[in-house]
Image (cartoon, rainbow, N blue to C red; front, side, top):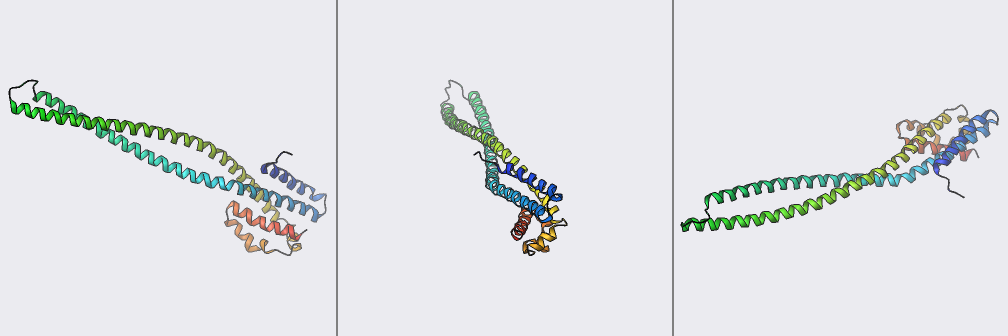
Length: 241
């Protein structure tokens, strides 16, 4: 037998709930209300079961989203740092080129001035040492740039893959939210119906359906409201069996 999804089962129980309302005129009062109650309870259980199923993925995706943002922030800072280092390197290279030009102006290829020759030899040694250091810096910057580019590519791929998973999860959450809202509207209608006090009295007025418990529903979010009403409906169902 193929597996039936919670969403499919919810649709079946929604139709059962509608059928219970339609049968109200054809069935005895107690039987019709019990059918309506039964449909609400079973559908509410399925919605809460799906909430519980979705919750771990919601938490995981929320945590992963924070990690994604933090990783992107770190990468952005590293890119800014690298760009600053490249700017500084380019400035150093410009100074080096200027120093070389000055050297070429001040130091002739041949001279009989030994003092000048010694000074020029010392200066060219310094320029060669600086050039070697700048070349090392250039290679290090290039390696950092390549490594950082690879990490940015991985970050972008992660972001795209995360976005797809988040989109699918959000669609499930929206569907569950819509079903929860629809269920709450029907459940509140049931609690406000003229027949509800009879069921309540027959069940011994369970505490879960007390005025204080029901009054707080207006201040609760959708899930908490659903859970609060579902506890009441389960108590009614147990008391009317």
